[in-house]
Image (cartoon, rainbow, N blue to C red; front, side, top):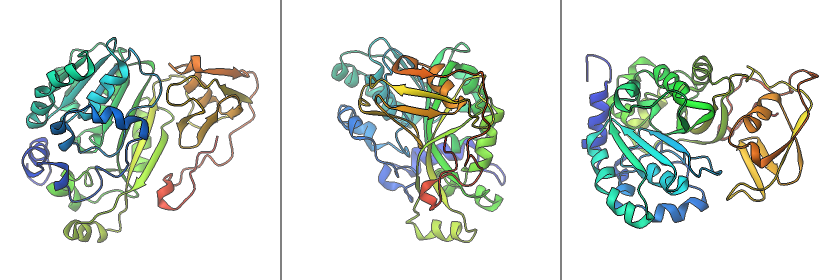
Length: 353
């Protein structure tokens, strides 16, 4: 600890010394959403030592065509998601993992040769350092990364604004941050934010969901899209007593943040639509852009202007036909409000367009 605040060193120590494997976690914050079925065969290819030290809270990889892309994993830990992405981008792609904990990275690096033999190629790199200081860790040019992923880690960062701003700068136009993390239904009080165990369990560093969305918008990601979410259960009596005293609920959620300059603050209706071609691997019948966009192959699907751009101005363009233009504006889509968006909270998802 540093005075009354949690610092990088105490968080790193929690993951290198207190937690030996994922079985040592006190909550399901880092393991609440199981991976999709199509990812299971890829996970089976990964070394057991890597799997044992996995602390993520969901799959943070978009399930579309990632062949040949450059992917940056923020807080890669022992490298599970790096090695999943390695298989998806293939030998022409590149996957870069960054983490602050030496003991975790040692596992990722020690198993590189194993994964090269299993995959038939090696396309991964690992670097140690703090996510708030990406420029000092990896020499990446601005506008050079296709997808940035992060799995239950940004909540551990001391300066989340700097991390999101760095992501926006590094992404290519049309690129995205696709990541899972922990959020709260209200702001976490200072007394809990000083608790090392709650920080290590990904609770005390969690952002209030609305603060996160506003922070993302200020960093340049103007329309954060919620992909999926799950309510976090606390099974440790000591931890539960601390959180229950403040009435806080925590959620594991996956978001997509697109770097598209023309996105608008709200979902505006221009009378546009798209038709999914059914050409994305593992998504032949339909494609899920986010939690309220399930687009069936061959069916006309009405979209707002922002959704139109997320499909048209990104790597997804070749998989869709586009209907309409920007000549006429019909107002905002009904239901685009600002209430707690998580289905697992028992409410309706606000965004509907």
